[in-house]
Length: 425
Image 1: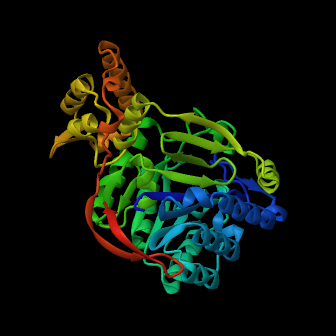
Image 2: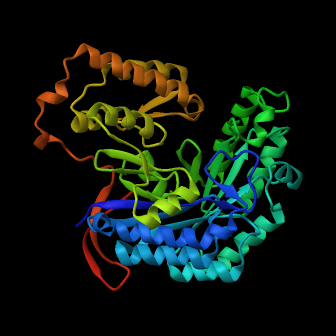
Image 3: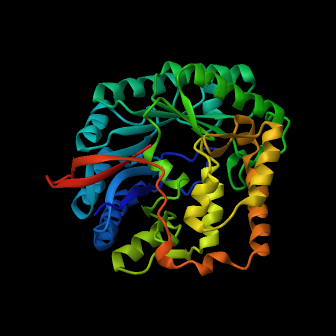
């Protein structure tokens, strides 16, 4: 048994809804917390047969606000995973937390239970701007929360920050970068603000109070350059890490590896199938409790669709794509894709190094458009060839390995031992 998988647990509860948030999360539903915890644990138990075929090497509690859900409930869910799945002792186990919303004692409880990574939503360094975003913390509370986490024993901390906020200029953004680096986090995520319909900030759509495209581009490039000087390597469009502290769980998404999600709206990718659960808290609880179907959407991915995801997801990363790798997996050529990448190279949007194509920081800024063009080129090439992948025997399909291998003797929760191989970035 050496197949690896990541587990995502969605915690949809929040103390209040942030003005920019478009994730499935709810405020004012605290009375459902305990029954939801029981439903998640029951759902994990029902999945025990499927989980038995995998080694769990990453677990991610996202939201919503997992810290608002309470340390005890988070620990109970993690313990259920340990009981019904093969969770490595050195698995990366992450919890998203909000500054000021968790005590040092609760952080210590998480650490002792096996949580070893925190993702803290700092967002910006201006208290007034934080209030306008609907955030319930101050920058001082963010600093205190990081201090509490260090005291609790956490040595793998990520902080989230946002650029392109209403009335935010480059000076305000540089102050946020300065505060983030002063926290000495091992990982920093820099997200550009997206104005989504249905959020409170939608009133600012096309507003002159929002930084224009050029201003946002300047902020992004400033973050890339400044964080590099502080030792943070950009390994994905929005993510920067000290060496060895890349998010192993999020890399599963970007490298097309398998993961299972639990909770309303959670997505999974197992084998060749993608599926998601119903995005309704009460219906999810009721259906799980009654043993009813909670899957809302599912699809079997074709070889060509997986090839498209290879381009779309891996070009988000600094690792990029390889012509040889692409052909070895999908038995498809990428001549038309390569023509575009060479064109992008002349514009400074892409570069070719060590046998791989990857976007530059300027290319990352245009990635939505560029990847769309590459996918169109891939489709054009497909129409020129009469489905060559069907001529290949299924037995010839090769499994992509982006990681180096090394011998492993590692333990599982519950005292079990595992001998096999471990994937390393």
